[in-house]
Length: 294
Image (cartoon, rainbow, N blue to C red; front, side):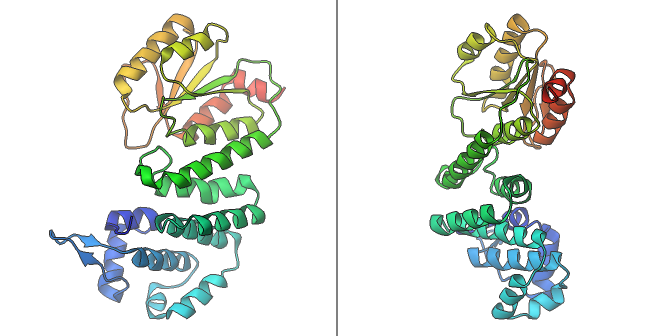
C-alpha cells in the first residue's frame, strides 16, 4: 500500500480528517497529491510525518511548533520523549510504517525490542491491539498481501496463551471457534488470552469447516457459552449454529464477536458483542467466575 486516502491517515494516526485538513491549510504540514476526481492522496512519507507529529502533539508540542521543526529536530524530540506511553506510541507508529513498507526485518526487530522492554500484558493493549485495529487485520479485512504481519502476531498470541498456567476449574469451558478460513481469529485469541489469564476454562476448537465438527464436540461436552467471530455469510451460518444449539445445548449462549460497523440479525438467539463486551460478559457469568476462583 503506497498511497493513502485522508480516511486512511485518520485511522492510522488517530488524528481526525477535519484536523488533518486544517493542518494542511494553515501550516502546510502535508502536501498531498490528487486523484482525477480531486480527492487527496498521501504517500508513505506523508504517513510517517503525520505519525511523528501526532506523537509529539499528544505529548505537549503545539502544531505551530511542529510545523517549523526540521527533520533532525523532530527526530530528536521524538527520541527525548520520556514516558512509557510515548515510547509505546512510537513503537506502534514504527510497526505501522514497517508494515506498509513491507520491511519484515525491521518489523521483527521493532517487535522483539518492544517485547524485551515491556511485558506482554502491557504490550497487547497499548501496541498490538491498536496495530491490528488500525491496519484492519483484527477481523481479517486487510488485503491478503498484507497478511504476513497478522500471521506473526497470531504466533505471538499463541505463545502468550501457552505461557499462561492452565485453568484448574471444573466447570464447562467456554468454547471458541472460527470459520473455515481462520483468517479472523485474532479477536478469539485476544479473548482467550484474557480468559486464561483470569483462570477461566477455555476450549479452543480452531477453524471449523461446518457444523458437523461442532456437533461432535457438543455431543460430549455442553458449554455455558460458545464464542465465535462474525462469519463471512452471517445470516445462513449463524442460523445453522443457533438451530444446532437449540437441539444439543439449549441452555448454552452463543456470543458473536463483531466489528462495530457490522450488524447481526436480531431475530437470531445470539448476542453480538465487541471483544471487551464479550470479556465483561464471560468474566461476570456465575459459572465462569466461579471457575476462575477455584
